[in-house]
Length: 452
Ligand code: GDP
Image (tube, rainbow, N blue to C red; front, side):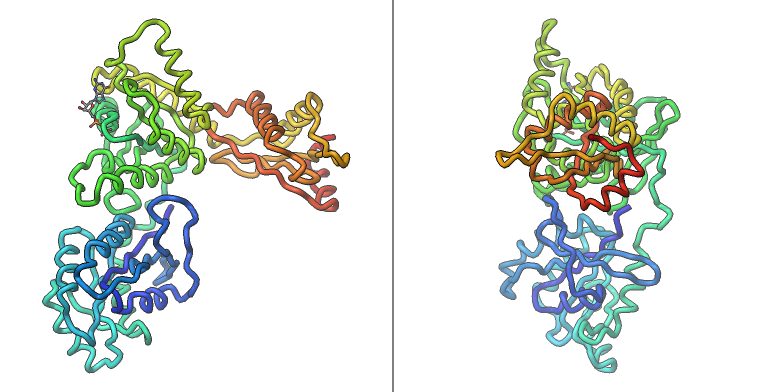
């Protein structure tokens, strides 16, 4: 489960980073190396009263201290806020209230995120209280703090922590988390309504791990499905964030939280660049996927249309060729329930574990049909043995004499062989090619069947 995130918000030069560093105590920022919302901001891990959390500093950019730059600050702050369960609004106690503080305060009051106001640079306890009093005008209790010395931060953190989600919100391991993603207007919310509207489904909204991410629980055949971040599908009122933000970034985050992603496409329009981008993310994140061609009722069709369209999906979304394709109409309800017949097996494959001996039989077979390549210098690639190192998605490590001896063609061949034998329908798989020292190999070989 992702850690709670606390956003630090304020105009430049009020001492946000001193506060972040104080809270985090580690000077090194965790910079997520995945594309998406988290890219331009630094998250630092912090700990207070038994809870780990992340602090995100919105001050990564340097602005002139001028209201002209408010839109930019706001943009950064908004992106950070979307992840956060609470915000610390930092102001400068030595300087007093500025126009920019008032603007930010006004905006924060409209964001429905719990705010704790920290009046920084209040080093002296006595003067600090006097300095802080002025800031009550902004509409919150003003806590005098010193980012440099650390005083006052305990009170701020106590306040912030009240807004953390309860720790018991661990996901049920038996539950399948499903994200519905796709371009605007492909019919995501219609599908959601069709799914949630069924009388036999138990529907209960539960707040997700991030503020605003409303999850829906539905049940089919005793299996619980958590539809993640349905708020991102239903809500259109967040126009302030801009379509890009709630489009692709929100979709990316939903993908990150899911086991299985329903990638919804408009069957009338076919595969677009944005669909490819989403499919790419699904693969990168290693999520199971089902391609849902929606608005099937609007497609003029003959006997071959479905086959042709499946072909198109397979070739244009070739990196998800393992995914099932289903043709639905959210309006008539056609095949909407059938999606669940695909989700369950895909989730099972995603979680599947295969024994080392089975993997090595497959490798042995693969290498005997087609030997690993040999370099001009006569060096031949050798696969010693393979084993599944993790699931979700299934990840195999193949221990070889030298990974550089295995080119893309051979790697693809092995992956194809693995898929032919093991299926893994609906899920991406990962194959890691690892070089190994001889002694470790001997040890490994005792545990596993040795291949060639
Ligand atoms: P979202 O932005 O992906 O959530 O898309 P919506 O669910 O809001 O749908 C956009 C429009 O397409 C609406 O006018 C829907 O009524 C329509 N729509 C959605 N699904 C279907 C479908 O399967 N068939 C038809 N004919 N229209 C659909």
